[in-house]
Length: 411
Image (cartoon, rainbow, N blue to C red):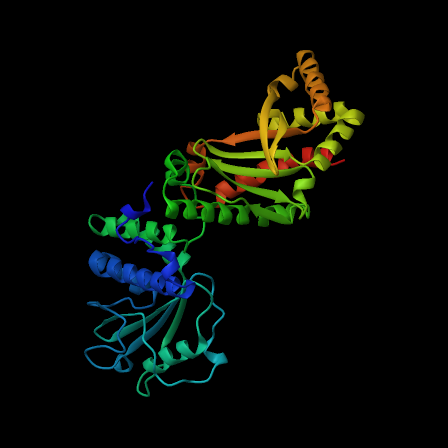
């Protein structure tokens, strides 16, 4: 994948030369410009539905401006219908009723205007709107002759949903512009996770672009956050979600779920790679593996029965590796045994395989045990056709089913 093939996506430039505020301002300006250019160049099949979403349903024409104090053809306050449109990354708490009326000053990010109407656009990519700035914009739209201006507050995610919904009704070139704008909102992190796309998996085949790396990690973080919210409703055990550092050379990105000391107990993890999303129960540190050894010594048959019940839901691999310390906090994992869950379900052969697995684990000084289930890309893409909800639900359900094993192995 290459984010820079997108019509609107721009190179970041040298980070050392810009402060965080300067980069945010640059992104705000570029997002607003992308929105305005999509509306302007897409034509009335794009701007009419957008204005209708703002309550302006009978516009005959539309013109667009970026960063101008007022309209070139008379003051905006003289228009019969006036809208203050605020677009932010997260839902805004700003209310015009909570602040005093200000003087009209400051520079609006954009204008959409036509015969009898004017829309002042203010955009944000971090935090909430500045009350003085919004009151100033509102003052610019105030009129003693017409009704009060309308205030419309939207998130960039809602903007994304709107343009994504337009796509099926558009033809070229409007369709191309809207699609590129939708992707741009995703690539800049304004929408959060909206569903899996091939870019999520293809990145790991090349992983040589720093912007794409940041995007993939941010996408996993948002997806993991949605899963964690569902898990916390299920069990207080999943109070922490830790997102691993994703370096350019790494072939997978991971997120771990469990208590704050999750590394010291058997917990659950998911990892994103080129072959799909892997969801697994795992135990890493000695405190966790010692507890597993004790549980298996006392209740190996109960653990096997729980694993057999989990196989009835969906097959998985039970994997045992040995961790060999290479340097401080750096280990090599040597594969020892991999057992498919269908073998555990076999009454005779399964018992032999299970006892071999248990005995081998007991004799390895530092075992690494994990129970793996892979959800392939095509299944995730199918689930994501109508948004993230179905993919989130599937992965959450796998976690919920796995939890019986987690509880048992933690004693």
